[in-house]
Amino acid sequence: MAANWKTVRVFISSTFRDMHSERDHLVKVVFPALRERLLPYRIHLVDIDLRWGVTAKQADNDQALDLCLQQIDECRPLFVGLLGSRYGWVPEGYPDEAVTKYGWIQHETGKSITELEILYGVLRNEKMRGHAFFCFRDPAFLCDLPSGRQLHDCAEFPTEKEADTLSSREARSRVLDRRRKLEALKDEIQDAEPPVPLYADYACRYQGLKLNWRIAQQKLSEADRKTLHEIARDGIVDPQEYAGLSGDLRAFVDAESVVYLDGIKPFGERLGEQLWAAIQTEHDLPETPPNQTLAEADPLAEEADYHERFMESRLRVYVVRDKMNRALTKFADAEHTVPCLVTGPSGVGKSAALAMFVTTHGESHPDVTVIPHFVGASPRSTDLRQILRRFCQILQNEFGFEDEVPQEFTKLSMLFRDFLLRVPGNRRVLFAIDALNQLDETDNAHALHWLPHEWPAHVKLFTSCIDDPDRSESVLEVFQKRKQENFIVDPLTNEERFEIVQRVPSLSAKSLDEKQITLLLSNPATTNPLFLLVALEELRGFGSFEDLNDRIKHFPRGDNSVT
Image (cartoon, rainbow, N blue to C red; front, side, top):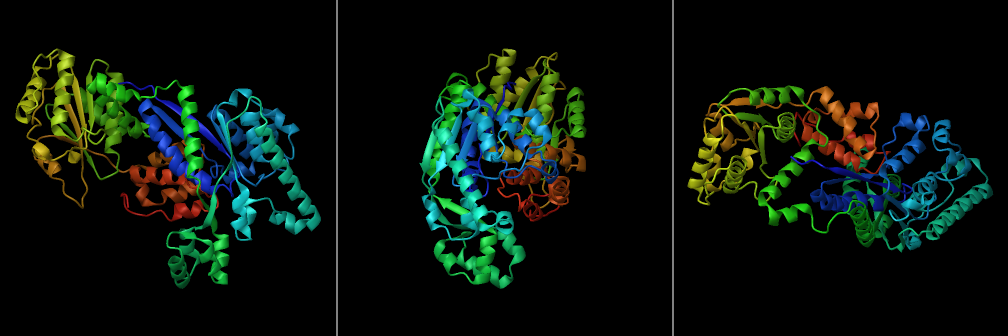
């Protein structure tokens, strides 16, 4: 089976507190659409959004700058810079380790982390000019913001420390200095030679303040929660609603919300198209995805591509479960004439276990014909008639069978059985059919009349079916009445869960600290791989470092199930 997968990373540079709307739009809308667009080309897209991901230990050891610059290197040549009306945090000094590794920064004291990222990522490297994209936000929306923390989050004002420790004159001087540095940075980007793609003064509208309902559940009384919910059912407190809040609720909203901007869809669309064009050029991608070309030239190859991409999606963050893999391998190498059935509850990892087995067995046994079929992986993969036609055509091509493959179901089912018996005894064939319960019921598929009870010893069937205690599956009941070897996929062990937690966030350069990992894994639902992966994916796109622990704490809890 073909592999040849590539990974493309894109680094997002901006100040944090004022850019939640844009970053959220990129992470939740633009990048998923671009990711979907790239999958047919066998390209993974990873967006590096470091709103959280630097652990407290790393921050205490002054490793934040080093980690940011390292990620820029790993993302080259793609870089997105977003600038609004904040210059960002200016470190008082640089750690020795960072200075040793990036000697140039010792000459850039007094500059913000954001400017250092832009200097290192783009302005000091002419080769990056055609692959970096900058967007400057129109500051007009600031006029609509309520005075207070939100306005301070979106523009340069004295920090709390400056207000407490400096005279008003000195604090004001520092603010003006940061504003001048921001304008100078924008000028340098605009004047860059060769030029960099720039979307200047993209429009946005202040829509209101976006609430953190989970914090509200914790900190507000039931009466206040009810009042706030009635005022802002959509989770957004617009300016009129804000004006009508009581003093206490207004204070809560000020403290536990972020600015929400509307009208940024054109910004996202433009940036998405720029990134697509850059990736297309960098990797020489044709306009038509390879799978569409295959559809016309070789329908069998097109269908195989769907299943290979499905397996890749299940294995990208898969932690090898040695016990299951060894059991399936042992069955494949034996002389059994009954099929193998893999069962387990929803989300426990049956598809991933089969995908890993199929992949590793195919690599270690190149002389074995491996035919994987994952029901639901393609538009035609749930249709039993199409499945049997595909299997027959593969066997026909592999062994030179000259029989015409019919359309009529009864004849097709008989030919499939005949082909299985005609596979040469010195050749081994391995079928893997995942998710039998998801087959369309057309042609009475769930009765399994089409599936032989007994198989030649050199032809093996591995299949899987959901087995949830709270629901019955007719196809499982039928299969369990037959002779078969049943392998049950167990919940994740502590070691497997820990390895997944270590690997998944690291794909996007994030790190959970030990306390956060302990908090997450204390949830019994994380023994279910699907639940754990969904939770980690939500955390990956979560935009608040301060609220991260609270989000982990309030994931649904359950016993080995997705809730």
